[in-house]
Amino acid sequence: MSKGVKKLHAEIIHRNLLKNNSAIGSAVIDMYAKCGLVDKAKEVFDKLSARNVILWTTLIAGYVQQEFAKDALDCLEKMVLEGISPNNVTYACSLKACTILGATCKGGELHAQAARSSLFKQDTTLQRTLVEMYAKSGLLSKAHEVFNTLSARDLSSWNTLMAGYAHLGDSANVLQIFEKLKRDGLQPDLSSFSHLLSVCSITGMLHSAHMFLHSMDDDYSMTPTIEHYTAIIDLYGRLGYVDMARFLVKHLPFDPDKAVWHTLLDACHSSLELLEGIRLLRIEKGRTTVL
Image: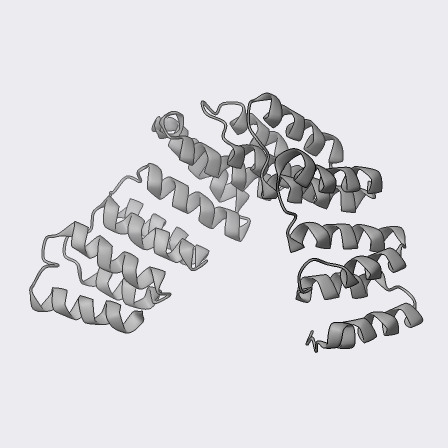
């Protein structure tokens, strides 16, 4: 893939197509970034004579895609110093960088700037990114505040709020949001049930966890994934039901992955249980599994 990008880039240079063509420059930067070659993307960017908001934003987005969040925010600062104002996509990418870094203060500053420029009210993607940033930072009151301003609340927005409350072990709010999204005419998806089962595990809600797991198939024709079963295994472990955890691992409808085995071993509190968990890990159905 990277060889093909470099070959295409060489052809573009040969034909002198980069000169004064920000669209092609942006495409080349984006291609390199998506291949993980952010240094090459920056090299192309630095050689461009006219750098507009589109080019800056493409580079910032590339850094965010590869989780070089600090570099993304550094680019934003340099762009502003050059007198170029961010657009809605720039703000959204920069807020994602803040989410990666947990830089809530910087995210709050960007929120205020976007609000002053009126971009915030016009762009639902930007609004949802703000909800995600605040929710993942544990600032659920701020996340809810932004969420309440959304003109269009899609399932992703509801799930983002659920995830934030689930991470805090706030089962009451997770369940409330689940009911509200259904009243809003939306059908929960696999992520919705992941958040439900996660908070059930954290808070020890065994009956509710079983109910939600069966509801996936019975009410929504969804097949639970390994992530959902892992949450149940974790719940059994938290409650001390090690035999039930082992039984479920042995009867999963698919091969256990590393997360399942680690969850099972975490559930094995005594030395004998731990030895049994390791034995299962190594010889279950004749498979060899490496932690």
